[in-house]
Image (spheres, rainbow, N blue to C red):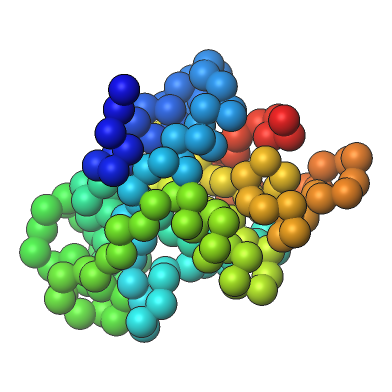
Length: 175
């Protein structure tokens, strides 16, 4: 039996890869997120979020390497550079400085069950957004977030959420 007290994001990254390959169980993927310790960048004293498709997304990462790729992409975006190399010392943080990025290490269940509902708007979790082949969105729908904040609670037709190209979403989240 696995000791979940030390459960890092490795198993979550593997489940994401399974789903992106068209195999694996969507419920197992959501369960893995709930158990995983997710790295969430800190921005201005709060968790880093972004708005897309009418949803406020909390950005989370399965490990420090995935977070570093995000930092590199943000640095390149901020400076107009292309082809940033992972591991360079000039990665800019949210404030455009080269200081190290602060992050919180949070259990996925806490993100889904406590933080998303506290946002007061439709919210979900976006994992590894800088990895075109490893990103996954966990939208605010029944089976992922509490029913009280799920956009599809109490309706038979799933709510449409616009998803950026290259990002996958677990399918058939209703149990």
